[in-house]
Image 1 (cartoon, rainbow, N blue to C red):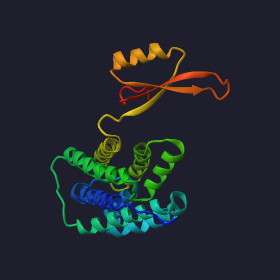
Image 2: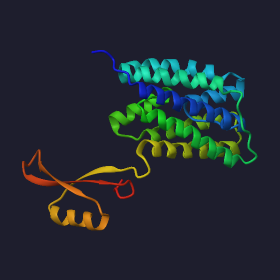
Image 3: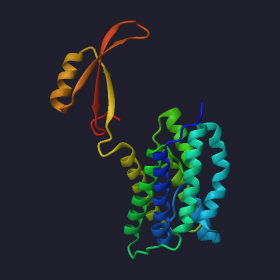
Length: 248
């Protein structure tokens, strides 16, 4: 079957990549802040060796992207190449734009918000921009680990490496930017409510359903279920709850 490429996804990935690159030039580089992932390594090479992050970001990502060809399939590979090339291209196009701020905390909040927004848009439309995204998506696919959590863990490791250049103060502000970025990614991917589906198996379905409808003000649906081991038939309660209302 031919590969089906979604034009809307491609445009969204390009737009998200542009936002990422703009935020990194306008806030991260302008205020001496690092970043996570491969782009963070590219910024570190800029600070230490003076290398252009547009080129170093592209070169470092190539081996990981080639791995992604086998792990993610052809469509995801195409989307990833588009995102990776777009980020590098926009890093080059936006390199003249910068906004040094006297308040490093404000700079870190802006950096985290803008870059996180860009990543969130790319992820929402099935794209990726670098090799660490491949790792995050694979862990989400096979182990159910949220992409934002994986990216935060990798970003933290990159941040430790950035201590080669950063002092402790700027490292802490970079960490703030990464945390803000992770929260913005979650918001873009899941929305404000972060709604989740819940399947409840209980010996008292009527009482449980009444409690959900009266206390949580949530609608419910009864489904028929059968135990795989016992073979017993039971009613399963299906409902949609917000993240705050869910147990995890």
